[in-house]
Image (cartoon, rainbow, N blue to C red; front, side, top):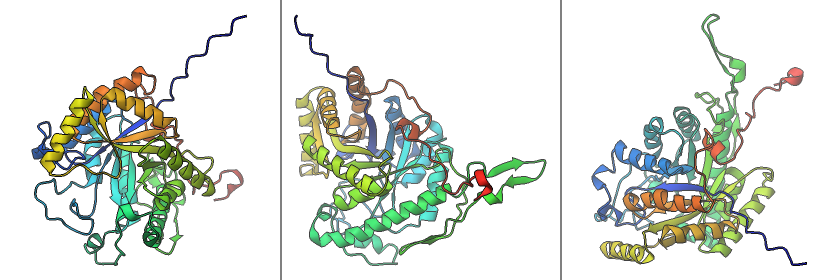
Length: 414
């Protein structure tokens, strides 16, 4: 009896894809590329065009970069360079501007949580969730910069560079900053829950607009924040907008594990992806979230062209224009959409559930993602062919959480 032929390999599980938008692109000379639009960087139309391009490619969500200081090659302060893009629009306001003109794609602005108040951000992101009908999230970011602290004058911070976060001397200040960020996210989530889903009555006959018993004080008391609540914004379509964070080492991995729905990580090979994913999921379980999904997305800067030689030549031209080779915290991929598709599927086997791609030149590499990479992944059964959910949480397979302060109907307790 002849042996049965081997079964064909199972198709890969569908990937999630996000795109990180930052000015003209992630290469410092991207604004000088012929396909860039540097005159439009501070217009709503520029950002709307980019987000709509991503939506045409069925991307899960876009992130918008933001910071509390000018872009700089010097982590300690302003490098005073005039040959690179400097200045940004506010990320939350930009996301809110494009929300009514998009239908499916998630919108995830960056917010620095070190010097800002959680009450303000909670209502801003809840508002974004309302105006986008359930497609909002936030990327929480810490600041270890003394010159950013000087903008506010409330506190001084020990300076350490993000790339040094794993070194012994940076451990204690990193724990303080990321511990504060964890408290910040806890306040956000409590404020988002402080209105029950049916707190609004809107009964013109009786004159009752809200049921005041369904608005709750959160009474958060911690070492860093004291917030009474409730929010002034009703509970939003997702209940809890998406919380995301970028992490490079064990301390920020802990923030992802304890507090986030999605973590962005920066492995440089499949083995690194496996190690990072295992560490985050173990920390998630230790934090008591073993039953929850925490997505781990790999970050990649991408140069995509029809041939690998063309992509390498374009990267070299941009490096020459910038006067130095590109450096990045993330792996820099240079090649074709088919080659990138193979890498993404390979790293997926190491545990990653998705990727956040950083276009080196937005005007060139974003369309290469949506019109080159996405069809390649679709042909391999690794990416959707249509949006299949109405909210960002739905796109990522995350449930809509129940409000923690909702009254328990059975027994009449509250």
